[in-house]
Image 1 (cartoon, rainbow, N blue to C red):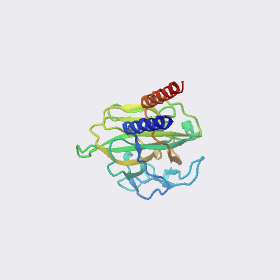
Image 2: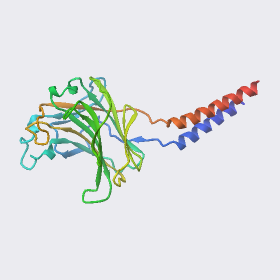
Image 3: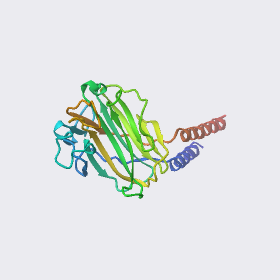
Image 4: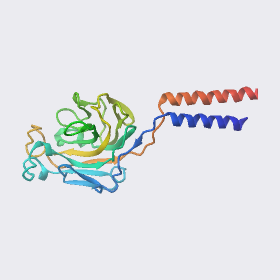
Amino acid sequence: MQRFLFAVAGALFLALAQSVAWAAEIMPSFATAPSGWTVDRYAPNSFGNVGTFAGRNDVLGIGISPADGFGSRPSGFNSTFYNTQGRSYDLGGAGAGNSLSASLYISTAMLSAANGHVRTDMWASMFTGVGADPHDYGIIGFTNYGGAARLRVWDANVGWVDLGVTLVGDTWVDLSFAFDGISYEYSVDGNLVYTDLTTNGAINYDDVIMQAYNFNGNDPAAPGAIGGSYTASWANIEMAAVPEPTSLAVFGLGVMGLTAARRRRRA
């Protein structure tokens, strides 16, 4: 009888696993960066694996320098568009059910704009197949410009949306973006914090872009900004997808039922 109960429990678990949508994380490893990463807009002063930092390995450092600020770049690149500096990675058209996940290190210094303005983001470039530039964008990141230090996301229909997440200095924060075919879901430390229900016809992923912003050179798009050099530190998250709570509850009830049946047999 015991073997039978374990067999049924196994069958229940297999059915659960097949019924739950498991997200496959597609953020490429930072271990070999910048290999495979191509310049997006303008190359930051540095972009690559800086090794071990704050307890994480293979950390991506995006270095921003006044040498690449507004007014200091070559002719043709001195517009505010090129103040956003980073690199992109081709995701090969990954479809719905996939997610981008990475950890951002937020230092205590970053929490105060008096130490210099910082902005860094993870972008999901989504292919729509419509228009001259057939892309929509999902963005999650950090800024301390124009208000208190905060995490925020980009919603194309309303603009930037600040997230009510309390930030603690000298800690890693896990950020993720997921596309389920009908919406964009943003999570912080595993908790869903924002859902964008208007994906503007997104079909699949095109690229992931890791960016930081250069506030140097009297940036007309960021009046009053405090420039300087800084490095945005990102690391890959290592976590497994888990069943939804409702599915876990169903599985738990099934196991409880099997346990009760076993006890009745013994009685």
